Length: 434
Image 1: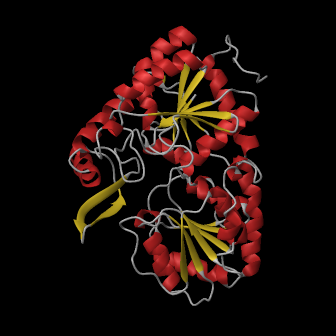
Image 2: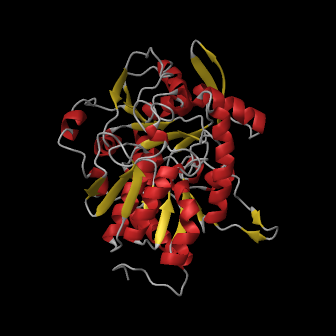
Image 3: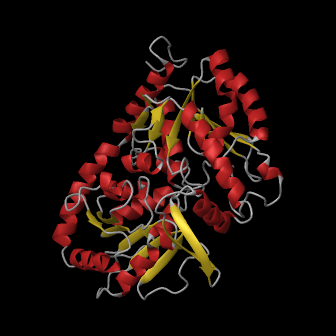
């Protein structure tokens, strides 16, 4: 049983990972049920191929606009009473061997963990895709007072009660301080319950404060680093993309272009990229694919083309067609699934040396790393690659080879092995998996 805040049709790195993992496990013979938040326009029960999807409505969703944006519901950082009640019925129905949590919604399972373990032998595993244990915003970014209606953001130097409450209040509004307090409680429960915790990178483990952590003063908490992965190019990532993909791809430039994919906002380094691109002497277009936010730059340099939120199948094809892929994040990307997407597509990747990205890219071999926020270094690197197609090709070949380390075949067995360890050698899977 996967428990995740969001699932298809919502788009994002975690949503893609949970879907790919669910389909891969189903292909290995496991029965997989995904539990996620309800949405007004989606059925409470559905199937996504071999995967069953159950959508549950939370208490916070029943209070209009209290915890939700115009596009997505919101799971609080502690157990939600309505979700708990629905989970009891679902656990009785499904009797899962493993409950695998992927974000805050999974904390609603924690009050039921011991009951489910005694009754059905269920074990709880948690994957850390963000900095959910240490940051109420999940991103280790600190916001300052708003200027012209937009709050400035910078990487946080470390948590403290006063600083976190002020930052969360600017981010969430009047509920900021209660959310910080609730996250402390929820994070403590998740740390104690998960056996093991899985971090998608060493950087994610460090950012969540779980490297070398001790329990009861002597026993080290089990933490495993297992990266995200990409399914085969003809696999589940393309499923459900629809017939509009070809029409979208016709909007790409006919020749070489530079590609950025992600939220169109400063924490993704977009303003740094736009400044660097504006200083380039090149006719190569810069294509941006992503979601607009309130802090998305309003003016763009000549040569920049924006496309709003493409399906993953179209994005994967765009990576294969671009000359240079850019991931200029200024926040500490826990992993950066767009990086391995671009590398799998054979693109020459230029990315910030932040978060988990340096664990993916071998600097100067399978991509080029630049200091986050350094627009001059980014401009110089882009300038060199624009002028050197042979180096771009060599980087692309090495990138594709490196991306194989993050394939489904390389990663999913490690996750299955983690499940087996959690269950213990005296138990067998209730599935057709060998």
